Image 1 (cartoon, rainbow, N blue to C red):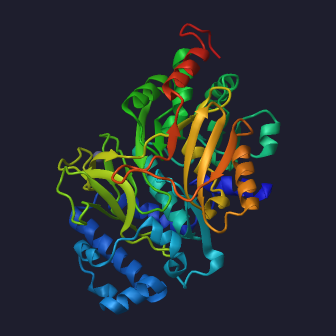
Image 2 (cartoon, protein in one colour):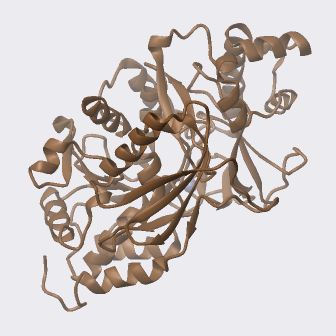
Image 3 (cartoon, rainbow, N blue to C red):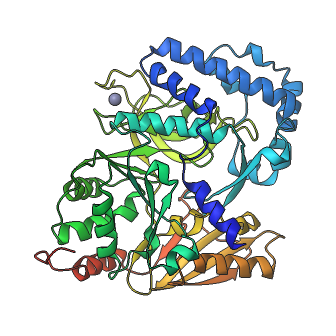
Length: 474
Ligand SMILES: [Zn+2]
């Protein structure tokens, strides 16, 4: 079990191994397509959509039946608006009717199991397409990095909720070198205690990275430490790249002040339906048309006007094993009317809401991201949970209300608690409480975390504890 967990952690590193021909072809295409005009980009989207639908209508039971009922043929989809003939796909659909949504053409051995939580409190297991989803995904990330002037070969520090292998932890380090030829160092954000922060800082200065890739809430602790100790910026750093949640304006300022490079944010999803990134000229999200089709819809399902906030509904091109077609993401955004100076003609998001940063406090006062704990390691036990809500009343203790499925046996529960405990290296306790439902008021966003502690106070306490502003180096 230990071995499989380490492998899972490795699979979280998005862009390292197996740079196959598909990756190279896709990257070459993307470096070129980013300068195409909107008509050419839309033609490419329609072509990709037809290929996705032709496959789904033939090989995916749910869509085969739908195409029969509605007499749909892939070749009849001639423009993006034609997509609206198809129904919306919800998270609940993917959870409860997954068998009907899987492509019969992709053999079980080529189905990569994935788990995600997002901000909805309802874990979701799904599959990606082996040999295709990841190389394509990597090519998109490589293009984003190219906007920062960073190459994949450059030394990079990755700071996320990684569960490091016990062997590494035993040796007293909190980072792991991923694929040494690529110069990437994965640092665990779970172990940034007061005692460990100086070691993190020293190692990062030694690596002297060109890029820091992170979740904003994780890097914040390190940035605060860096500023409090008045450590010098990293001389080679070209970019700080955050993805996974929103980055608050004060965090962006701290990151740039501490490390001495521009901070960029990317919006994406584990389900691989939408990808959007800030460019070198602005802090607005450029939505990648080659990645999928992104709609923003009102409650009544009609497209929003420019500037009007609605829900992001997205169709991803890179996973034919379980095609996400018109998938409700639960994220809120609005289209921008202003083009970007960079010259790319991608649709641009004016605002992006949701994706809050749910933070919990460990026994020793460390403030860490709940999402990283729950979903950073793709724990298979999540599949057996319908919905969950975490309550924290005291540091180091999390009470998890679980609406279980029939598969959530007491063994699975014990495995789940043990796995979470491993993820945070034993520095938090988890108590599962089974419930039939978790009540919340209609019209309100479901709360994944009910936090009774004053997280800002704890973060401030950490700031104070990491040393006085005039403290001497690490
Ligand atoms: Zn731009």
